[in-house]
Length: 435
Image 1 (tube, rainbow, N blue to C red):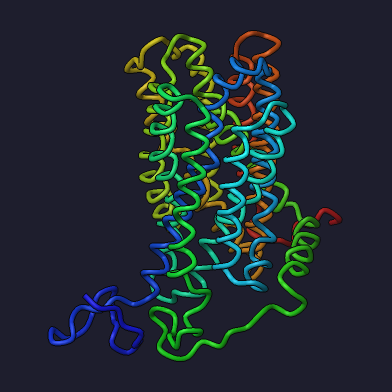
Image 2: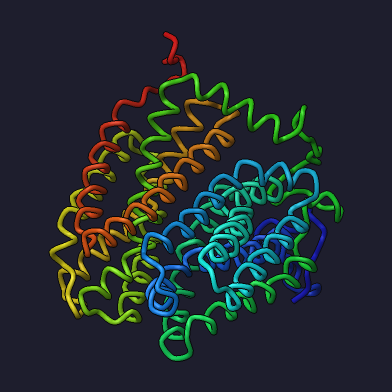
């Protein structure tokens, strides 16, 4: 099979005459390489969940101390996203993602030499947070916008689902490594995996199709390359300033902050140690969390389909209400083994995990128009801020009470609030705070 750079011969992913062989548009190669990077980023970011117990045992650090490092990671992961596009506009996706992978490799690798908790915050919190944040949803959206006209939505959906796949792939493997060889072996595995992706990014990823004489996939005429006036960073700040004057933004950001608190911050970070507190093996708990990733993919695709047919506000209200109800019953489901009731929770929670993303993105687009993508970047930042606070507060709860029950109940109540906020969202940005 040969690869063609001739746009007019490519009507689908595979096309061409039998004599010249099947031909693949370069956009699909670029998307596949990006998917590998995004899968890795998700796996790298989720890794601290399997480190909490061994770090606590070796160094005597409290859950709150370790949870703070995770919080810093989540904070940088979210706040990097709105500005990552600015860096990609100035330096290109290939350079930004290569540096991001190097930061992940450095942050994870240096942890094997740490002796103080502040070093964990610096390495895993700051370095890995910055690296993975540069390969988050903004990378998927930027790549799809530059390389695709046809199937753009499909590509964004698949790349977003790559986050769940990364969790599915990495968590069980790293949990086994921690159990058999210690947490340092797992940290070095993350370093090696990040470095292994660098050659793929450098040699196969291209910033735009125009630089190799191509049109975006599905484009019927040349697409001019343009950069927003004033720079992407200035535009991101301007959009934040304008959106912050409207009530819908705060309802969306508040609900998504609770979404992050109840997923990445609480369940993603503390489910494994919480299950271990009840006698469950960490490898079993990691496997259950990986199953969440499987059903996460199904739930995301189904939610995207529903978002085109049902009022997104209603969908968000239902998703948050159901998630809250499931968290309220979770404390009664923990046991030394994976009982059927826990498996039901895992499947249900997986379907709901990021089902909130498509309706939230749809509302940003409908309310804020051309600025909807940037607004969604800031709403996503609020998601990670909520996750950061939850990671630390849940650790403090465990340290002071000896269990996580209050954290689960509190998250359930917050999800009920998120459901109410979602139903209060108006269809127009005209509902300003000053009105």
